[in-house]
Length: 74
Image (cartoon, helix red, strand yellow):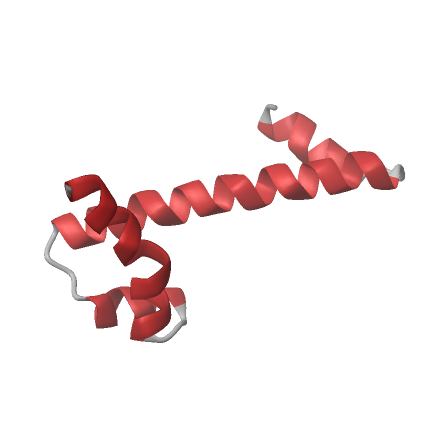
C-alpha cells in the first residue's frame, strides 16, 4: 500500500477500510521502531537511552526489543 493509498484509506468513511489502514500503519510504525532500536544498539546506545527516546521505561524497551535480538543471536 502506497503512502497516498494509506492516507486516503485512513480518511475513508468505511470503517473496514479505515481499520485496515490503521493496522497497516501500526505495523509500519513497529517495523520503523524495531529498525531504529537495532541501529541504536549497534551504535552502542544503552537501553536507558533508547527508552528515553521512546518515552518508555528501560524495562519496557528491553522487554519489547531485547528478546528479539537475543533470539536472533542464538
